[in-house]
Length: 257
Picture 1 (cartoon, rainbow, N blue to C red):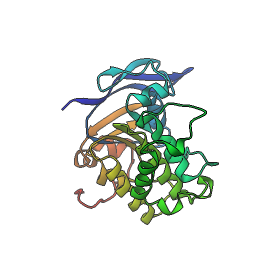
Picture 2 (picture 1 turned 60 degrees about the horizontal axis):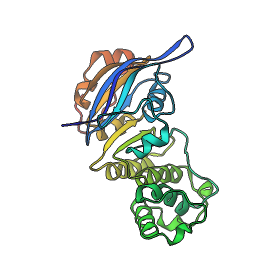
Picture 3 (picture 1 turned 90 degrees about the vertical axis):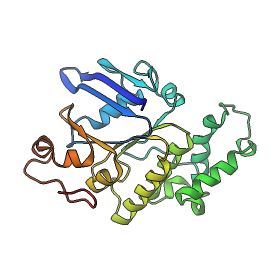
């Protein structure tokens, strides 16, 4: 299977602080890959390196075989990679519908044009409505995004990510702050949104990780100490020692202790 995302000896330092210390990772097309680790492990920094917000100190990132670690975020997005953030990154002064519609424009071949009436663009309104229906926000389409409940704002961000048409999706803690029922709905949405695509997810909820991911990488102090299937990670003593200390990994349905 061909590689969707490949990191090679990726390093990032801020002055004397070495945050990412030689990460190498190969994620196949169509794979659902989770990155876990304690707070301060460098997970968000790693996402920022992949998506172009940070330039690596050394090493490289390839997207579908093409070098992207020297490109700007918008260029990487147009090459087929989209990401969400830990803190909801939406247009709060725009409606829910307008947020999704903005995400759609470039993927449907419409560039920026100040004079264009985007409401009349062929297919955009229909596609926007379909995405809102799929994520369960159609009844809130005209509501200002700022007035959405927290879980719905996270859902809207996932909807915008879907709208971009990216083949590789990065989600940074998409279920953070959600209740159990909200998390269940978010996971169902993520499964639907990532079908046929490559998903890389940073997530603290181990139930989400072990039930969603095909493979898991454990990042500790800027280094990946283990990569494997949920069963392999669950039984890895290095993960128990470095990531959870004396605690055992939580029991998750379908993953033996």
